[in-house]
Length: 248
Image (cartoon, rainbow, N blue to C red; front, side):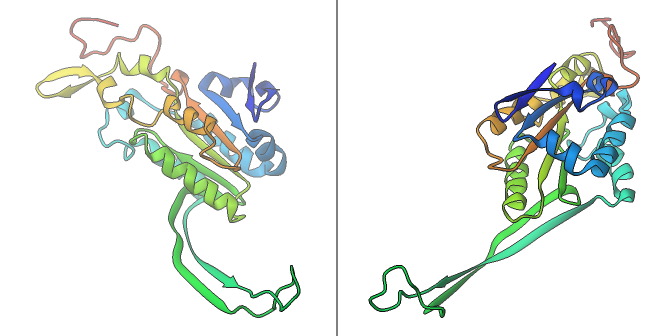
C-alpha cells in the first residue's frame, strides 16, 4: 500500500502499524509523515497512542453540536496532559526602506529613510494542538470552509518558522455507511443521522482537493481520515433499534 508524498510513492506500512491502518486512512503531502516520524519521534508516538486509543460510540455520533461534541474532548483529554496546547499568534509587519548610496548601484545605506509598521499583519491564526514544532488539528463536523482557515494557519506558522509539520484529522468518506444506519429523533420521528454530516461539512473529500491545490503552501501536511473501525459499537449489518423499517 502506498500514499502520495509530494509526487513520490512511499509505503505507508513502513511508517504506520497495521492496526492503525484498519482505523485510519493517511494522505501524505510534502513528506510530512517522514518528517514527523523521523525528526519528532516522541510527538509522533504520543499522537499514535492517541489515535490507537480513540473510541467513538454510536451515542457520540447522535449528539448535536457540529464540532462541539464529545469527540474533540477525546483528543484533548489525552494530548493536553502531555503538553500539547492550543495557541494563537499575532505579529506586526515592519518595513524599512533603504536608499541607494549616491552613484553606487546595488549598494545601500545602513539607515532607512522610511519605516512603516502594519499592526496585526498576522493575527487570529490558532491551531488546536502544538508541541515542539508539530501542529495537530481536528475537524469532525464543521463547515468545510474551516479547512481553508486551518491550512492558512499551518502555512503561516510554517512560514514564521514556528512549526515544521502539520497534521489534520477528519472523517473518512466510509463513515457515511455508519451514518446511514444510526438514527436520532428529529421533528417527531427517527431519522438517519447522515443528514447532519453533509457534503459541505469537514470530511476527507473536502480536504484533499485543497491540499492538491497547495493551499498549505510549503508546509508539510499529513491528512488522517477516521474510518468505520473508530466506531467501537458499530458493525457491518448494524440495525438501529429506532429503525422501525429494519432497513440497513
